Image 1: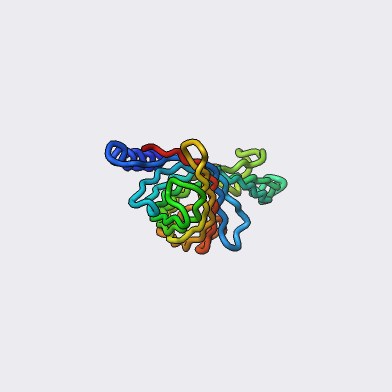
Image 2: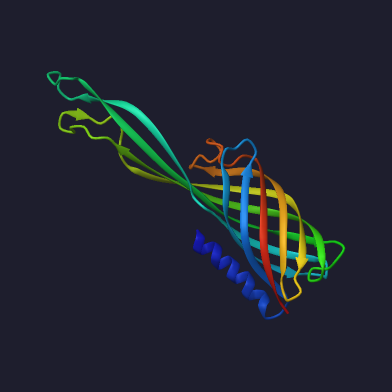
Amino acid sequence: MKKISLLLVLFVVGSFTSTAQFSAGGGYSIYKSLNSTVTWQGIQGFVEFPRTESNTFFLRLTTMLPQQNTTDLSLYATAYELSTSPQQVPVSIEQISSTSFISIDGGNRTFFMNTYDAGVAPYFSSHARGIFGSAKTRSNVSYFDPEKYQSPYQENETKESSVFVGMGVNFGVKYQLPYRGAILFDLGVEYVLALYDAADFFYYGEITPISFFANVSYRFDWY
């Protein structure tokens, strides 16, 4: 999935570079859903193409760093034979899960007071986003005699995926640097809908329908 996302970004960049002014950049991103205990942090890269002096189209790829959670369980292994003593022995189980996601968002950005490549300019954006999440879970079971006792838990590793779509708006400000390039900061909110959630992002509240995000970016301009 990451390779497909990268190829999509490269294709869009390649289709514009020979014919138009454009910008590319990246930076730090944070993502937080309403009523969620998880605060996602990651990196993002984007391309931006001016349509007019004050209106642009942007496409951004964001990768969130994995979140790791550990759950401890206490169960009992039961003996195969009635003659075995004791009939049950305690077993400790450590479940380790790691979740992460990448997203692709794009939309229109409108600048006010100044233009896309001049001065300080507040801006407003509307966007659509696709989110592709994954969750890996592995279990560590404490020692017991497998010849005498039946394990209460299947020790294995699983991997599940989730797909979401979102739509939202964000507000920001751009400061054009004295040399070529600009610094951008924006805050946004979006409504997220689960298309497929085998990784249970919604169930565990790692992503919820109302989500917020912020980006700090450096943008380099090509003319």
